[in-house]
Image 1: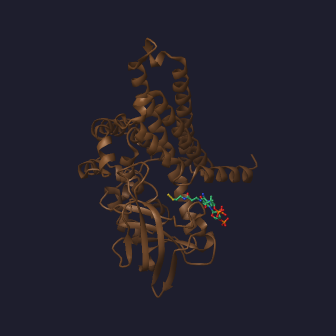
Image 2: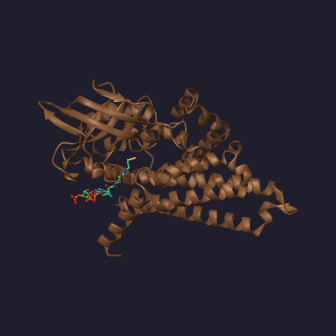
Image 3: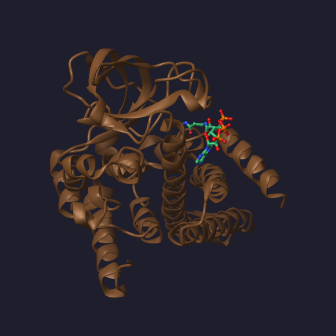
Length: 380
Ligand code: COS
């Protein structure tokens, strides 16, 4: 059920205020410290951000996807590391459970995920299974009423904070059909989380290696049936890709606002930068592409809310929006010039931050493959 319009506006305006008043002023600080303050996380919990996509009966807000995109547009207007705090709980860390979980699994975990008490992570990627996800090697051997998991996952977002992992593991033969998904609590013996990696951008959001050394997982923690894990991961990613598109749109909107403010105040050749036609061309291209990405994202979100398959649409939206925000961030550095290249304006930080969007939850090249395959399959 969609929210009534008043409630929706209240949610979006309190979020807009939170981003402008609480997050915007500390963007530089969190990047330097590589940590989000606990007080900010507590405010995010109070705003309900961890439970945006969790059904109401489990304590979440149960938003429609279009509504989630509107929230993501607002959250995009600041450093993306802030969104990452609750990003896995809303997306890839929880949605396998929401889509495939039994009532028992859902009632056990979803309320704490919705409140933000429990952080979740999605563990798919391995050293030799990034884009080629169906080639993953982490083994799950059945043993009486348990499975023993052995292997390693890398680049796992929020792993250092996670209490629950959705782990894709091999229970059968080669390829996608041999993969199953498991809910793995962090405190099981044999599970270790490495130190956060040093990264190019998005400081404050952490990715770590997670190692499984004969971790004994109860069979009741199997998510869906044996062999369903790859499809589960792909369905979770279809959804996640669309959410990322909305974040990219929000960041582009933020960058355009920063560009406009700067271009009106900075003067060259006796006039404001905003009066110079070559600058105007960059503003126009950025605005046009952002509007296009916004419209595409909302269109696909509405298709998903209608129950349509959005594999192609989500891939197209993520491909276009992530490439688009890269171009907008590049133009922002260009328009700010020297002020864009030095660190204190924060523009170079966004330039580094947005680079990740073309890589995670499927690279641009993977999106191209998905778009082409689906188009050929549909014949149009
Ligand atoms: N939804 C539901 N099912 C899907 C699906 C989707 N979006 N995509 C694929 N499947 C199903 C296929 O229908 C197929 O099932 P059947 O064998 O029953 O027909 C099965 O999954 C295998 O699919 P496919 O043959 O397309 O697998 P490939 O190995 O060719 O891989 C790509 C497909 C490359 C698209 C996939 O591996 C991928 O998305 N890779 C990127 C992974 C990624 O995003 N990683 C980021 C890390 S997570 S932050």
